[in-house]
Length: 293
Length: 304
Image 1 (tube, chains in turn brown, blue):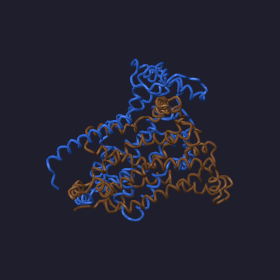
Image 2: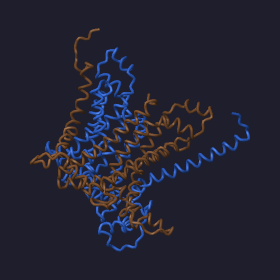
Image 3: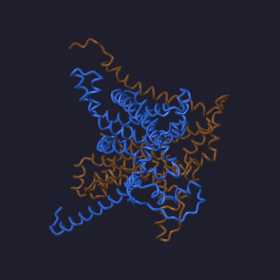
Image 4: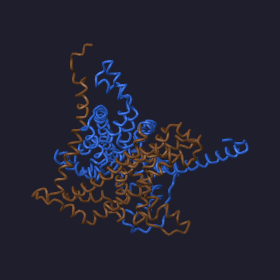
């Protein structure tokens, strides 16, 4: 062989690093470095005098009632909507996995919410859930009093529904393909040995689905933080109490650029996120290892 | 197990009944999911007066803080009394604002999708080929960054844009968008599934790294690339948070934000604009739905 020219592009030691470089530099500039600066900002009293106050900003933000309300609301929302999104989409996937006709048409139907522009979703949601809206009209037939869905504690329900409507489709697709990837022979053997549907589901399918369950959980968690979009468009800067999300708080703080507040809030949130992600990682290591190939 | 013929016949009947029932359940729920799409398109063909007659009650009250007394009922209608293209005519020829905002969206989203895919496929290749502790740490950092909600990453974005002097320009949205690690994450999962034997064989045949990347990995990632492109496109096509914070000039706002600011008088237009806005996403979907399904099929788990 005549490999004399040592081209950089052919050198398998250097090339992967070259590939990584553009992305890594970008991530460094736009995420890592500023994040480090934010940690610093969160511990000084203001960006001009830069007096080190350590945890004082965190204490302040934890005492801030608006932040606390926003954090509780966001957390409640995620705690309710993420498990629902996982379980319901898994059920939907199993439904479509039952050898029923028109599966691909149904699939398209479930994916549709992804492409409807948010603003028109919001318009329709308003038509349905407004005080004078369609739902109240419909409920009136059964003698139910009018409910102001968006301006009461029921607001969370509306937003959870909106979230589920938007996200179930894609989650379902992920489950559907995971169900397809379960080796057929395993199920057949179980059937031959007389395993019931219940056993097959909990002992076999669930095991194979577990990596997907985690993936969908993470995805839903990310998306649950994005629900602010809809809430914001539905109700504006200062919604009803139960709909005041962390992003509202951040937006309103951005307006009067308070770096201490912003950065300590951001750091607190990321700590919570890292803890959750860490827990999911550990869970994946525990449950996922015997299945993943 | 021994089954007599007697028990078999009713069982098949029951099976059919169950299938029919399941189909109905699936159909009804799919219809609910489909409804808003249909509604948006159907309503876009109504004339302004018809829209106002149908929804006036709602949007008149929201505008004036609920002080208007409206006894009119809301009509959620699917079929227009008279099909009218007047809304489209107004949007396309009379109010250049909407087209301008549409263009704003395009100019923000297209570079993000293209460059995110480009940098991400390179990085994913690197992650699949490199070994060792350092790589694992970097990948972990990527995952953390990916999972951070906007609420967190917007603060760094704002700071960097301020330093670079790109605040209030489109770059403030485009650049961080390009380096969001979502695509890296998905693609490197797929690339890692490429059998090492394949790469070894190519090497024996004298292929360099660049050739392995372009001729082996890229084609194998085609459907994943496409599905990531769809997901990223849809995510940014509907962006709301970033423009609100990073752009103060409302002339630069994409249609996704602007659409929501349509005022009461123009409610009729909203559906037509929304339908137009939906078209690129719709086309992508129709063309790429199968990719979307198979592309991320293997990406179970979070670690990869």
